[in-house]
Length: 192
Image 1 (cartoon, rainbow, N blue to C red):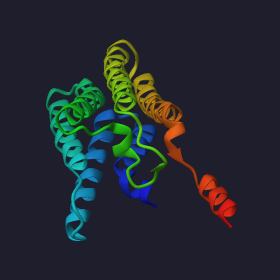
Image 2: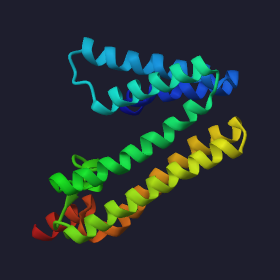
Image 3: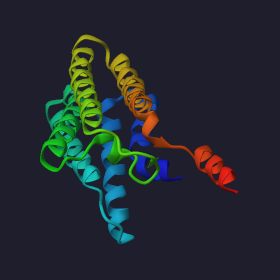
Image 4: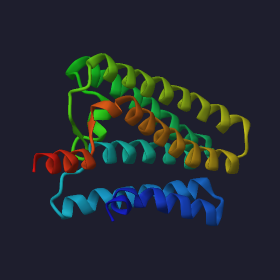
């Protein structure tokens, strides 16, 4: 349920593009869903996520330019801008506040049996930054050298696989520092 609540603008975008093959219309559906997401948070007196506001403002600006100039390439830039912004945020959070992407993404769902070394966390951040930067560049290459249909599926599938790959690589890299449920059960049983 939480996945759907967080991603219904994206689901609307997917469905609208697949049904109409009109990228500008699909982006308008996404913008409307994003606005609804923000308004719903306000009505329910929940905090509005900064990422939702950023996606909405950027998406709306690019949609307006795409509509005004009748050029869908503005919409294709959104993915690149967002992944590059993500890479910059990861870097700034590391430099300014010593925050690390893996720790941020797993803060409430993962327990550590030992604190991972800072060098390991920094190297994971570096991998995320380089991968996001490369994906952003590749997105532009595909956007300008392939059909909109190809770009659409590349973006949706490629970004999903890239982010999942980064998460898996991060988990594997930090596996010896993670606490798993079966370890807790085993230690409880051996204490008895």
